[in-house]
Length: 418
Image 1: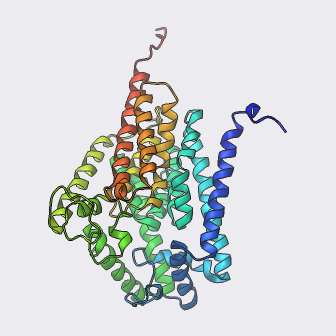
Image 2: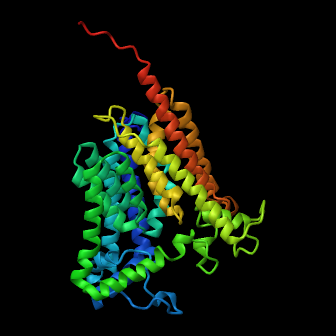
Image 3: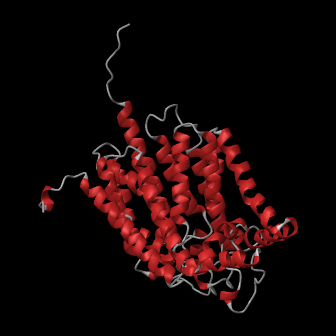
């Protein structure tokens, strides 16, 4: 056997990929076979649709396991997942694990197309904690990330309709990628924006009309509206009667952070509250802060992408919008942090490049490492260590990219003969 010291450098990324795929497969399958965490919720609602041709009508059963499990998801999601239940829970667990593994593989291959420096793959090692958490919860983070990256690749090749439809699919699964729709408008990618909006609406409504019928479909969408637009997410997920994981340290969205840090009778208050606010005031301040961040982001990303994308502006902007999905959302759980992986890889590549942006990139990676270390502290998470980490990551992505651009502009180019 060859000595590990003489292993060709190109073998290490493949070894890392194999390790990550095995980790995801083992953890995801173990949790799914035991119906732990979110796989249970997806399977329960899918099985009800498969058996009854309708969504579970029970929304208020004292036994939470008998209620509809996915009221925050569009009605088409449990409908699309219904075939998973056709072979029983074991087959569904295998299929679900396969989806997670294939999504991770797709993300790896799509990110390789970003032409990042060779050292960028090291970012995958830094992402192991969030990949483990994603596999443990069996959420839709990896499939959504794969769809977003595939959409970015399509847009890079000027395949506007395909890119828009892929983003529409991501929005259907998890709503938060809806942030890419105003981004498409800012970029003047009108065909992609139209495909995203119209294609998303058709894919959301038409299957429900066919399977559930017009009356039931109308009822399901009214219920969805009540849970989302008129419900707790619209109020920043700060209602004290919500389940613990929506309002305690596990939710690190800004409204949840500020509520814990300022509301005296909060069910899960921070150990030290620097000031006291009423719940409505805390909510208004948090939502105002998020609105200011959104406007700042729109200002930064306001210009159309340059022709040909000469400085890989599309990867940078894709990473920033993915970070924006996390920072601006009403729910920030640890398994969502897989959406920060493109930014981590971008920073890892820039940190090892030695260019003018490498210093800011190393700062960003340090923030990521500190954020991962803060994972072990309920106090740090209660004060929003990951939210602040993500804001810092976004700033470092911008600054490191500006440094590289300035370096490119400063290169001397030989004059061409006239």
